[in-house]
Image (cartoon, rainbow, N blue to C red; front, side):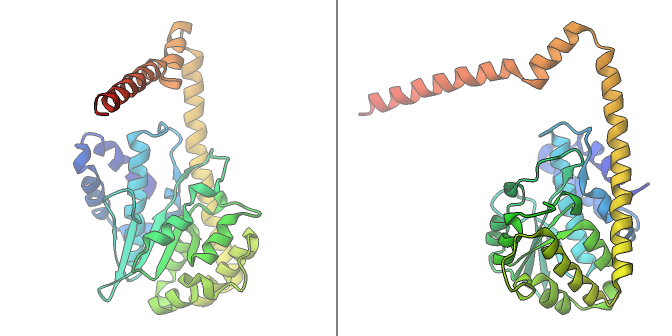
Length: 301
């Protein structure tokens, strides 16, 4: 099975696990994947897109995010750090890497749907990731290369200003493939230390990634042709894989909708698409809570 198929299988199994134990189950199953290091070297890019057949804000979508963090931690472990995905969500980075018993790096894995069109600055949370590093020296944010803003964006100037590396899954996969050609010190000083790469805080996407790519090629002692052939092959391979997966899903969904009775469609739109009954409950709860709060303030004046 491919890495993507294995992750999907693990997440399906995790749906039967108590929510409080789900993260541990997913982590254990991922760590037990046979030849995981080899699969990361060959298929790391395949996890960058969330399956379109996961409902928005569903447990499966959230579990995909957990799995991507765990896989990113495994990635950093395989290039020489001791890394772990942080179980608690919220005011912390998702991945922490340690070297010589010191916190050296924090990281965040961003996954999007292939059908995602908007690429908003707030989706990347660069400033927050920088703040979450605390005593760690470096911060790395990983996202699909093709879903980074492709022209100009504040995320690039923010990344330079906050010394946060913006990287793609395909770039990291290339670094893993050639991990024997560099040391962690070289990686940290020449790539993770973003401020040393740029003289200005440019917002230009091509300029940003050109300099990052130049450093990766230099660190791995490879040439431009080899690097870009790898990047292109991995990105196109993943795009083809996930687009086929999504197109098949939407075709099945379209056929299913076309065969539905009108009353069934109405029910789905009311309950699932707009969730109107729940909206009524929320409105009434808000009103009741407000009355109760005002009454409490009045009685305790």
